[in-house]
Length: 76
Image (cartoon, rainbow, N blue to C red; front, side, top):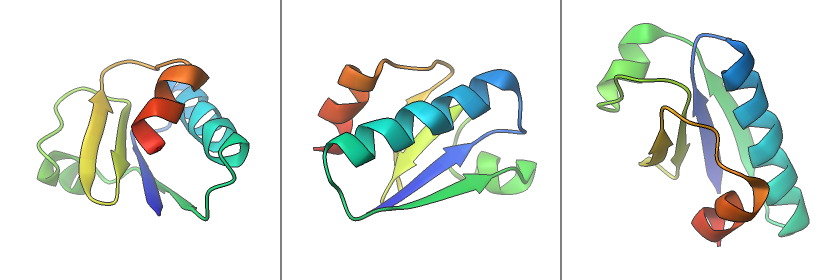
């Protein structure tokens, strides 16, 4: 599973990366976490507000940081 965090490195982007990693570890997933900071690449996903979470090429959330429990539901 490829998990991408879209954002420029703001505190919420960092928080989303931490929450996503926690959720993936708790679910014992085989995953790769990638941080995408290039604005052109972020926009190519159709995302206008960051942070955003992309799982296997599909945008799951944008503009907010969900809880670990919410993210587990998105990842499973």
